[in-house]
Length: 125
Image (cartoon, one colour):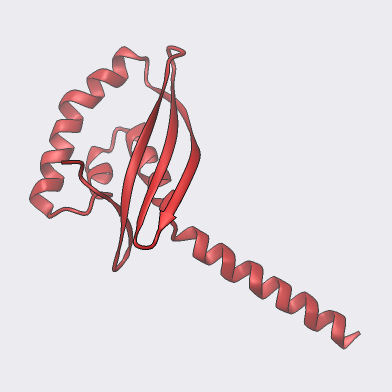
């Protein structure tokens, strides 16, 4: 009986640690970024980038000006699905299928980099 309890506790611990690791993965950041876009919180979206504060403000302003208009044209964001995640050391690529309320969709690729406090988007240059 003690052996069974030990096995169950070990399995539960392993699942707990795997879920903690996954909660800090690149998909978590992508979900955070997409949630910010859904809410129209472009400052929170800009904070998902690995850039300085001034650049974050610039990104938020551009998103407010341009992206919000594009979202309006498509009726807003309906949903999104993460369709692929590739991790290569300190870099990751996450492909997202974005569905809009007008029925259109598009695939986006987000490039991420692992930093001290987790994952951040890389600014495409």
